[in-house]
Image 1 (cartoon, rainbow, N blue to C red):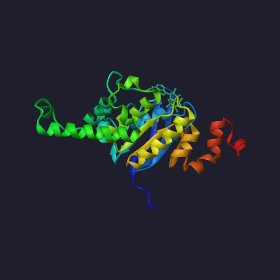
Image 2 (cartoon, helix red, strand yellow; image 1 turned 180 degrees about the horizontal axis):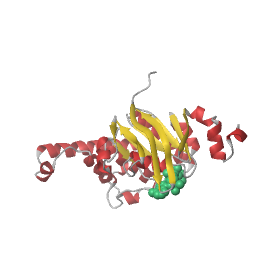
Image 3 (cartoon, rainbow, N blue to C red; image 1 turned 90 degrees about the vertical axis):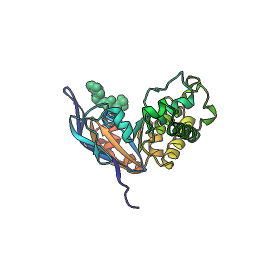
Image 4 (spheres, protein in one colour; image 1 turned 180 degrees about the vertical axis):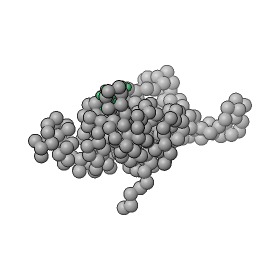
Length: 261
Ligand SMILES: Nc1ncnc2c1ncn2[C@@H]1O[C@H](COP(=O)(O)OP(=O)(O)OP(=O)(O)O)[C@@H](O)[C@H]1O
């Protein structure tokens, strides 16, 4: 099968915070339609990498390109408009809004309707509102919480709140969906369901970047994995290749590479 094109390219990116090099000449790409896992021990630089892709941090040197376009100096909302959406390690929902309203915030963020269309409720706005509503319900169906659309977000179980976060990110119509530790706090049964959901989301046509500590989940759901340690990329490959890679084993066990092999 031919390799699909790169949606996002991290090209020789270095990020320094004072004397600390959080990312050190890191390069990799995320290909259209794949689920890419980004893993590494605590402090390896995963979140920093995520933040540079979503406009929270600027690279000290190097470049991130999305659809061939440099993200350097773009504001976060601009990056969302370009098609990168993310969820957060700590859930950030509008707790006093309903489930459906939370998702509609995402579809509205992506709406092309202008201020005057909305103000005077011009036909274009009404049509778009109906489309947003239909799309929001479709997405809730995909993540499995459509029946609860009218509940307040705060009334959902922890697991369903995580699903809603994913739904809200999907609603912006992203070309790349970044999930930051979506399984945090999940029990094994919930993790299993999450794996199914991530696959389903990909099958809906999304490209997915997954940062996750749970190895079983990462190994079970990703197509490729990039491994960071102390800010450097130490390995890249299929789950099977990564599982058997001595440098990765050493990084996780905290022993020298020679000792691990
Ligand atoms: N804003 C910042 N200012 C200073 N240092 C930072 C900042 N953000 C991250 N770091 C440092 O950069 C390094 C990489 O951190 P990062 O959070 O990216 O790692 P991580 O792989 O996501 O870790 P974890 O798995 O624990 O979340 C760490 O040493 C961290 O302390």
